[in-house]
Length: 327
Ligand code: PBG
Image (cartoon, rainbow, N blue to C red; front, side, top):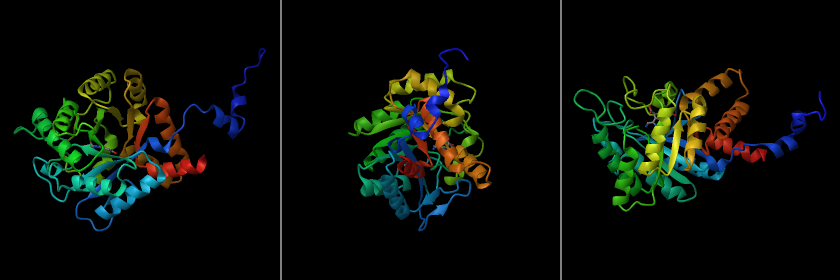
């Protein structure tokens, strides 16, 4: 070796020095936990493909929200599973629809102690499982869907939600939600835009969790996994339409996209570690093939390192508890 000898290992010699020079930390305040609530349940129910994740009853949701707040998570993203569905997804707009009722429940329970968010999309509420209204020939009608999203955004804001998350990948959805919220006096409700959402096989277990009725796929509105520049265009449009925060989804297979989006905008960037990412780790860990907690923390650290400030993850509550023990 030449003199002076350069030895990067000096900064790895023990836990104290590694902690001192660590470039990336995961903080519970930046984790958001997705939660499912199903209409009519009296007891929470397990989701087979998402071990550890529950379809909540209204009661168990309230308790889980309190537990999440106690763990220190930054937010809760709510998804509703209705008992019945129709062509237009009217249950998403109905103030008595399960998601709107759940928003009221959670707000009544935790108030402003965490950030309460809701999925702004029709797919849980439509009988065909698509994210919007269908034309007679079966394609998703972008502009008719925007009107439905606008009403749904207002219904969620009326229920007290802090942040709406438009996730249907319709063109103009952020602007439509912003205009409707403002017109209804909800200027303070924020928009976390699912700006970059790929037509991904990693959403499989989520569709079990919401008992999705979808046949076929969403490739005519969600993005092609092959594309990166298109993501930057989507992000630019959403910021121009008034997105307060933008999200990339899925997370781990798209870290290059997370990094590019981070470099392109100055609003907070979130990434959604989706159901399939979670299920793969849980399945391998259940087989004893990987060290579960270590891999969970490694995935979260990687998503942070790529540039996501906020991470939606089904491990949020557990990870927050683990982080508390560690530091
Ligand atoms: C749409 C929505 C989906 C997810 C979040 N919001 C499903 C889809 O686009 O098919 C997937 C989340 C996950 O896989 O964890 N409402």
